[in-house]
Length: 73
Image (cartoon, rainbow, N blue to C red; front, top):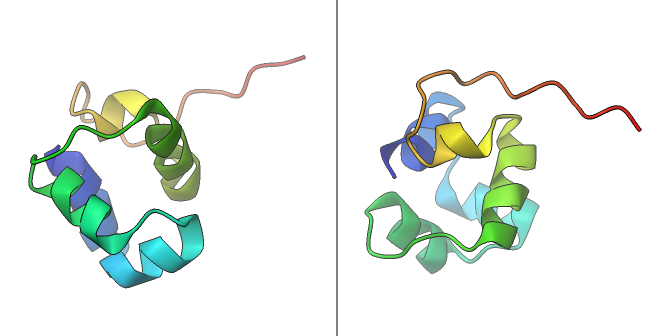
């Protein structure tokens, strides 16, 4: 899960800031970042929206940070 940490560091956010903004605990974020815990689908969605990226990027399936286009209703 290197991209979960990478995007946070690139944006110059601390784990505490992400915790305060998303409600995901700092200890959980830390475990995601070091690969001790796989993120839940709910938390992946929260982080993808927060960082304005795709789930594929957060899960290290792509190097493309740009999110997918939004679905039209």
